[in-house]
Image 1 (cartoon, rainbow, N blue to C red):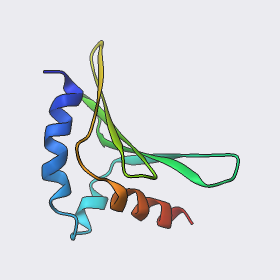
Image 2: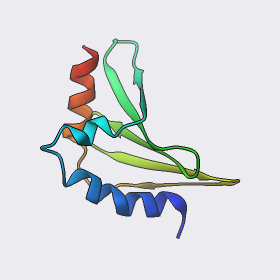
Image 3: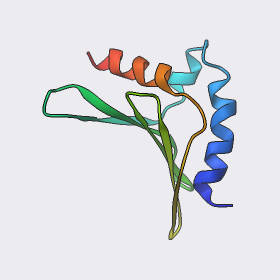
Image 4: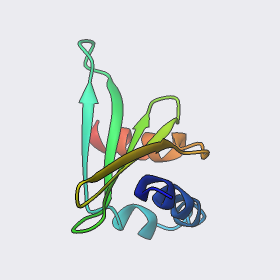
Length: 95
């Protein structure tokens, strides 16, 4: 199993706590991509760093892709979870 697949398995546990602000406080860093219309297209959340490094990229429609890096290994996989609420939280914080 690749590092991104392992992270995706753990993402479900992380999302179960959506009513608690610690869900959002546990993010180590975040970045975002804007289009030419100045609308946020994607939020990128750093959820683990220093081995493995795990980023979750979330698009406006709630689709999440987990990117995992460990040593020389790189992998990614699509999350089965709807991450629209997480996207909305960070988009609102940036407005």
